[in-house]
Image (cartoon, rainbow, N blue to C red; front, side, top):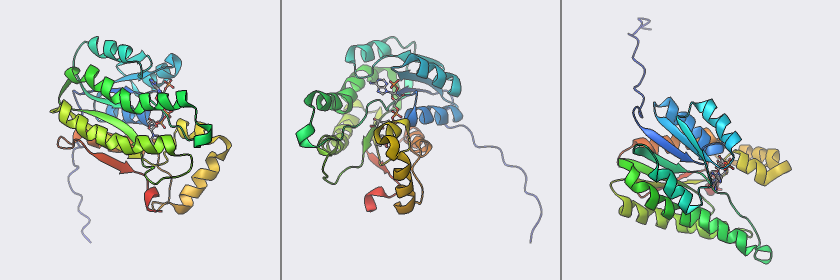
Amino acid sequence: MNTARSAPTAPPEPRMSGQTVVVLGGSAGIGLETARQARGEGADVLLVGRDPDRLGHAAAEVGARGTAAFDATDPEQLRRFFAELPEPVDHVMVTAGGNYYTRLADLDFDRARRQVEDHIWLPLHLARAAVGRIRPAGTLLFMGGVQRRPGLGMIVSGALTAALPALIANLALEVAPVRANLIAAGFVDTPLSARLLGDDLEQRREQLRATLPVGRVVAPGDVAALAVHLMTNPVLTGGTYDIDGGQQLL
Ligand SMILES: NC(=O)c1ccc[n+]([C@@H]2O[C@H](COP(=O)([O-])OP(=O)(O)OC[C@H]3O[C@@H](n4cnc5c(N)ncnc54)[C@H](OP(=O)(O)O)[C@@H]3O)[C@@H](O)[C@H]2O)c1
């Protein structure tokens, strides 16, 4: 056995030095973890969320350069935020917006319309507001789901899941050379999932640990690592990237 010590290698260069990442929905869950990992790669981060207290805590936790508290689904506030940025940014990620699972008989059309606004109109308003403020080869990054099989209660979320890849692929042509990509996630263990599942959360985690091919629950940090990859690989655009621990194979 060769026991000679090799010379210590230098730590890898941070991949995002000098870059700025805006996370709309950056005070919790996947957005907060992406902000943390982008900071770890040397980026500055600007966090947006609605609750100013939660935003303040998140900003202190990751060392954000700035925060703005507003509803990202409001086109006028979005427009103003990007117009008032003192300098261009490199990446904009949107993790704002939730899910709506309901049977047809119980469908609340106002709530369903809000889901369409969050997932379909928000990317378009955002692209209009942000694209002139993003440096070339920067990215727009969106979140969707993997519920592609029809199921009871999936009528709204299933339709949005199907629509988003087409929307983002077309957007990628419109905003080039800025890139646009979609992350399609299965169950991720975030505050949103905790809110949706309530007392059933632990049971769901156990079920996923027992059945997913990867043998564990997907964490926000797993999705954040994919988000940072999509920001830093300069040839990825127009794509939908699944991350679900193999959930769709079951
Ligand atoms: N968790 C999952 O299993 C999963 C799976 C597939 C897709 N997704 C999607 O991934 C995205 C992120 O999910 P998550 O689980 O990380 O959610 P989360 O834990 O609830 O975090 C969402 C973040 O977005 C902010 N936010 C929500 N609505 C906003 C709005 N209208 N304007 C500005 N900020 C807003 C929240 O702060 P405030 O509430 O203070 O605004 C919070 O910082 C969502 O679009 C979700 O649908 C999640």
